[in-house]
Length: 349
Image (cartoon, rainbow, N blue to C red; front, side, top):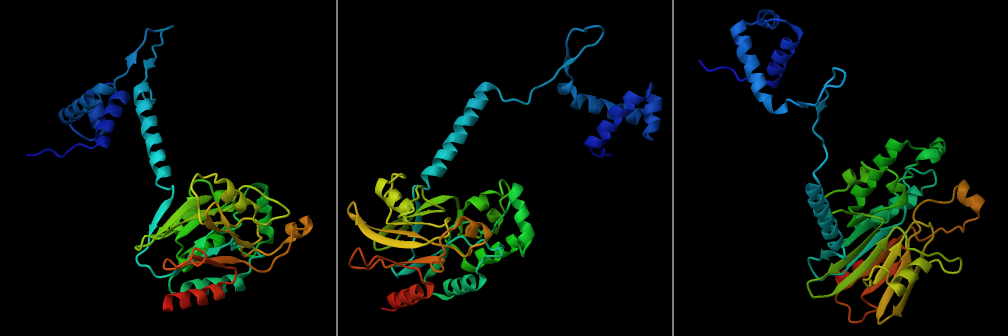
C-alpha cells in the first residue's frame, strides 16, 4: 500500500509535538496516531531539517547562541548582480536614443500633442478637451501624444486642494483611463503631477498595447518606408525660461543639443502657455512648440499674475514624407480642426 505524501504541515506538527510532550506515546496521542506512525513521521521531519540545524557557539553564563545564516549576498555575487543590473539599465537607455517607430506606409500622418489635461481639476476645460479628443479619434492617420499631468494627483499639504475639487482622487484616475483609451496615444509622457504617484503608478496599468510610456522625456524617430526619417524631442518641459520668449527652453535645447541627438521638432507642455516657432538652424528646419493644456487659471494663477491664454490647448504636427521641400515635411497647428483638415487634404492628394 502506497503512503500518502506528507505535507510540510504534517512534519511541523510532529516536531511541535516532540517539543511539547515528554514521551513518544504522549506526542503520538496528541496527534491521534499510533506511536509507530508518529515515530516514522518524526524521523522524516528530522531528516528533512538536518541541513537547517544551526551551529551553537561556546556557552556564556550557560547560554549558547546559534550562528544564524545571513541574507546578504557574498561579495562576488553582489558584484555580478550590480554588473548585470547596470547592463540592463544601459541597454534600456540605449534603446531609447531615440525610440524607433516604423511607419507602415508613406502616407501623411498627424500627431496631436495634448498639453496638460489635469482632468479632475475644477479648471479643466472639458468642452474643449472633448472637442480635441473627438477630432483626434475621428481623423484618419492621426494619433495622440500626451505631454503629461493627467490629473492633479495632489500629495502632502497640497491634498487640501481636494476640498475644492469636483472629483475624488479615484474619479481622477477614472477620467485618465477614459482619456488614454480615447486618444490611443503613441506616447504618454509622465509629468511632475503623474510622478507624485511614486511606485504603483496607475498610468502603468491604464496604458494599452502600443502606448509608449516614458518618464518626463522621450526621443522618438519616425521611419517611413521611402527612407524619410524625423526625430522628435518630446518632453514635459525643457530646461530654461525667459519672460521675453515663451519657447526659450525649446530654442535652448535645439541650439545647444543637450541630448546629443539633433531633433526636427521640440515640444513640451507643463507651463500652461503655448507657442509655435520654426526656423532654419544648423542646416536643418526646426520646429519649437509648447502646448498650453486644458487647465484654465485658478486662484493660484490669478494671485501670481500669470498671463492668461485661451488657445493652443493642443499642438498638432502633420508629417508628409513625400514632401519635396524641407519646409513642407512638417507643418504644425495650434487649432486641431485646421490640422485635421490639412491632414485629410494631404492624404487625399
